[in-house]
Image (cartoon, rainbow over all chains, first blue to last red; front, side):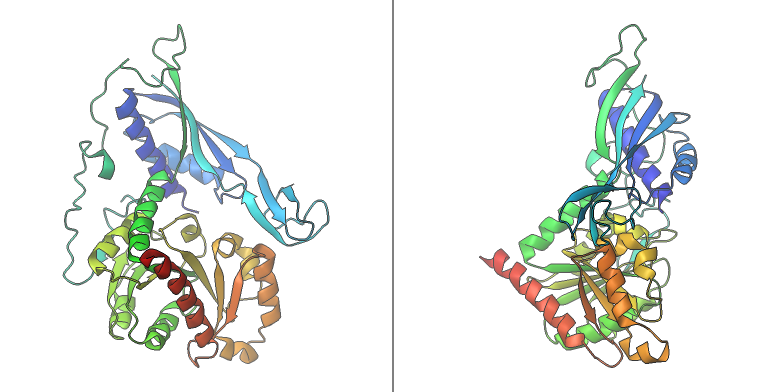
Length: 113
Length: 281
C-alpha cells in the first residue's frame, strides 16, 4: 500500500511531539494496526527505518499491535469478528459483511528520552 | 518528496498557478502548516510533557499518543469539508483503476449537466492531458500532479480548491489517480467516493481490491456497450460489488453511448440538491 506515506505521517507526529514535549530521542514506538488496514507490516518496518533517519525516532524500536477485524453481517444482522476481509460470517456462513472495525492505523505510545 | 503533503516533486498546475503562499516554509515556526523534513527544532529537556515519567530511568518516559497516522490528512480533509458545506457544494471523489474511462465519463457528465456550476480537480502522476480534456468542454479544471505519489491527499485538494473559486451549490469532481489501493485510505473531504469499474476488467475485481469498493457509496459499471464482446457477466459484477459492500449503489452506464448516464446525473443532482438546500436554509 502506501507504507512510505504512512511513515512520513508518523515522522510528522514524532516531530510535533518532540517540539511539544521536549524530547530528543524516541527509544520505541508502538503502532496499532487493524487487520483490514491494508498495511504490509514488513514494508512498513522497512520504510520506518528509512524515513526516520535524521529524526528523533532514528533507530527507534518499532512494535506493531494487531487489532481484530470486525464486520456487520447483513444476513444474520450481528457484528462478528472475522480473520480475513472476504471470510464468511462465522455464525451463519453468509457472505454479505460490511467492515465496522479493523482499519485502524495509529500511534499508541512512544518511549522517549 | 513528502508523499503526505505532496510538496517536493508534486505540483499543482492550472491557470497561471504558482505554488503561492505555500512554499512550505519548511520550518518549525508554523505548526499549522509545516511539512518539516529536516532535523527538528529546539529541544527542551525535562520541560514537562504529559508526565508519565518512569521513575529512576533518567528522563525516559512513556508518552501516550493515540493519534491516527493520517491525522494530518484528516485535518486537511475536515477543512475541505467545511468549505464545501458553507458553499452547499457537493464533491465526489472518482476512484478506479487506470483506463476505466473516468475522464471520458466525466466529459460526458459535464456535457449533460449543462449550465450547472461545476469544477474538476484532476489527479495524475504526470501530464496535464486530463485537465486539458476537461477544459476543452468549457469546465474549469486544475491538474494536480502527484509526482511519485500514488494518490491525491486532502492537502493537495485544498490547494486546488483555493484556485478553482468554487461557486455556491457547485458540483466538484475530483478525479483521483488511477489506483484501486491507496486512494481508499485518504479522505479528501469529499461527500462520496464513486468507484468506476469497467466491464473489461474482470468480474472479480471487487474481490481483489475490496477496500476501495467498500469505501465507495456508488459504483458505476462502465463500458456496458462492450459487455457482449468480452463475455462480461454483469450480474457477477454486481454480486461481487455487493459481497464487499452490501450498501453500495450500482449503476450500469456507458460513457460512450450514453446508456445509463441520465441515472448517474440524476444521482448527482439529487445529492447536490439535498446538500445545497441544507446550506441555504
